[in-house]
View (spheres, rainbow, N blue to C red):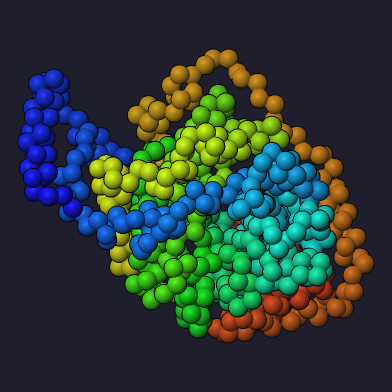
Length: 568
């Protein structure tokens, strides 16, 4: 990539540099420095470190294969990232209040539209209705209680769903999407008009301590949802691979990237086996990516991730469409690195995380509020988190240039190194018999637990500095007023679900649920394309999300680590 004259100049200058280091620092060894993924880092980089890179193949220009520098020739100059704060609490109308407040504060989707990133509460996440004994104590506490088409109406009435991205954050995805579609159809809309995103975590949340479905059954359910969306919801991103969740569980940057791509490959392999054309479903796979403290490492992870995904789509699946090869991303800045101690310092941490995400070229961003280690964000803290994104967009000048760090000797070397490391991890998974076997053997979780334990031990020893926790500690307690939810949420949610069930046509509901059992049995035999439509019909017949989930569990079972009660 450089001519021999330049490289020879670099060699001579580096000899002088190394001599100066030896004289000034009297032989002290600085070679043990590593990044958060354990990659050895030098003190200085030059063209010598990237002399073997091929510019066209390894770097390129924005908007061309392998899309390492950006999906688009012009990125933020034409299409700024989406503001997607995660929000949801209490009853649907409470969440709607927060949605409206964030919209008033300038939360934007693409081209001035809106994007709402709605998280459900723990019972809804696990397919449990508010009137179920297992739900008690959890209703509306960590997200919105939303289990029927009428709940969606309370939350989304008056919003033009054809122009708004609705992101449904839920583990038990099929019933949740079914009720959203049932609500939309009650408003005169068809599924092909809807735009937004489901998580599709039946299989993808394998890293969670209480994953919802047994592995192979979860993969079949995830594939059936993709089958449905790829046939009839062209504007819908059906699957979100949660690298952020893997990061929170203990994955470093290299393993977050590798394990997320390996998860996506397993899902894509299943879709191909189900008879789907990769170019029909690959554009609907997106990734939720954690941006953490190690500033440059996570920027380089992002760039390497784009390149790896493009090559995976082209070489493994033979994709021809650019949209199949382009990495769809939602950055969720780090949560595990935020602290209860001196929580206002979290504003600074998150601002740097968000700055890294912007420099990485993300397409959507969520910045957690500074008080999230304490509880649900207040309206004030949620808007302040949104302001972080707005300041970066409007005041830093970053959006003027696509991939502004390109060409940095360090950035290009580290990007290439992270790609190499990730390819090594993916080979380990293949050598272990593929993703499903590697997961079920405990190999993947073992690695993440080892990383999590190592990080915590380093913090406890003071080797990893966390400002306000193990260094620069203040003796006085800072008073942060936590968010207080409406104490009547649980009572109202239970009354509503009982009243909903009392006035429906029970025979019609039972018929729809029996049809769902038959569809699930067909799926268990390998026949795709029947379960998701049956879920929609059940939702239209007024079956609740919990009832749809329990019906599916007559055929597909809980994950092996799941306990009967919800996790505390």
